[in-house]
Amino acid sequence: MTSKKVITFVDDGDDFSDDLPSNDDDGDEEEDSLDDHFTDDPKTFVLRPNTSKRRFSDHTPLVSNRERFGSKLRTSVRNPFNPDFLPDKKPLSAKADMKLKHLEVAMRNQLVEYNNPLIFLHPHQERDQYTEKELSTLPQRDFQTRLFVSSVSFMMNSLWVRNHHSDIVATTSNFTFIRDYFKAAFATKNHTAAKTILSAELKKWLDLNDYEYYTFATILASGLSKGARNTNFEINKAMVPSHANLPTARMTFLYLMDILFSKVYVKTFLYKENNSNIFRIAHCDTKHSKNKIVLIYALFSFLLQTALTLFVLFKVLPFDIGSDFKPPEFEETSGFFVLVCLLASFGACYSMMIIKKEYDIASEVYRFYSRIGPLYIIDLTVNLVLPVILLVSGFLIIIDESDLIDAVLNTAALLFIPEIDDRLPNLLGYDEEATIEDFLIAEAKSEYSQFVQLNENNTDLNEVNYMFNDRNIGLPFNDVFITNSIEQGASAQTGSLYQPHIIEKNAYGHEIDPSNYVTPDCLLKSVEWRYTTFDTKTTSPRVGYLKLTKLSGEVVEVKYEGPEALDVGEAYVLNGVFIITDIVMSSSILTLRLCGSDTAKNFVKAFNYYSLWEIDGDARRLLDSFA
Image (tube, rainbow, N blue to C red):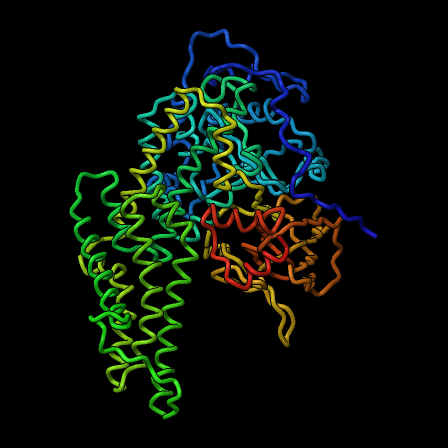
């Protein structure tokens, strides 16, 4: 009988590099003598000091792109989120090999972890077998996905994804700009460069399709997990000067990533979820601009909607202006009166839906405006106060109608009044997406300037940490690679489709199908799996047995289906709240990737903060019951 290995979400195997002696060099290695820096002892990983005066910076390429890769890579540089990109698997030149050794040494020096011995499966190499030593260390490695930020670039990358299977994971997303952004802000303090990188990359983030963004965001969310303790940096003057600076570096990393993720959240809220109106567009168009013309349109909408609502209200109030109104006689039982009452009731229900939507997003609206100003007060009045007035007074007016056509026309008019501010931007020809994106880029640069001010004022890190807790950045989250698959979004070549998957049962058995949003049938509280054992040394293990326990309690088992019985190894168990994001099956499971958090509460917070897939109402209620 095989044993089970239970994998806790917050593993004890965190990086202990804070306690290590610092290797305080500047990240610049001698071009032609790096091999001499390695000792013969495989347990010792140190860099001997350079004696040559010939040095190069981390910006100096050791090998040209033409030497290193083919045209496919150069295409990817122009389009860094190209899901079809994979580097040509050519032998490395001597100079590129030196960079690779530098990366390995940097990782081994700084990533001394309690239960995670390092394994290097380089994406450019054709290696399908682990060595005996690597194979013996695999059971000691957890399934946390981590990040390592290096001072030198290798294979056009300088931020490396690390998971259970390897400390250099093949990726199709381009994470290099994050290293450049962090380095300019923290190490070199070149704030002009940092702002340039920030604005350019934020634009790319905002324009990514869903598949590209979600795989990119879940990887970063894993690195930011537990206050960015899942992210480590190369220790040298070009990146992080010493281990004593790691807490500050991680807080800085959190702040810089918060600037980006908070802007994606705002665009999702305003544009993708159709929550923009003339007042919010006016805020976007005027906060960082001297052009105030749009405020005239916002004022026009406010005055028009207020006037129309007051005229409706005066119709039912006991004033002279509404003296022709007669309270309805509810004892009337004619068929006409029943029809009018039904029409008024349906209109009231629609008005209640509008009110409920605005009530549900009230906190997000306040977060968008960030303060109580004139536009916020007008927005609140038009979208919460006026619909309530129209709901009550409109109902009374409709049931008092004596003509059915008049009742229909008045109902349509009453329902149209709250939508004037929503329709006005389109009528005026505003490009809402472009206006919102320009605002967000300007807002991001403004927040970066606040970061610079925090540094200059030597602000206490505890104050910054309080802000992060309020915004939910750094929550426990993990992108779990159960199989050694490439990080990518949708791919026709591999059959990958990065999105939630529904697990449900029908007359023919269980099915695992993709979904565009998270439903109750997507949510898992326990995942147990066993790898096949027909090739124990393979770097691409397959899953021969999978047991999924849904949050509702239903258990689903997926077993190997082939002509012969197949042996499986030790059982691994992952507990928390997860969804399947990528699964490719044949007779066994070829690709399996999950993401989630340790608790239902953190799961919801992380999905909201990182603007991941929408969670439907039934799924939210199920998660709330487990919170």
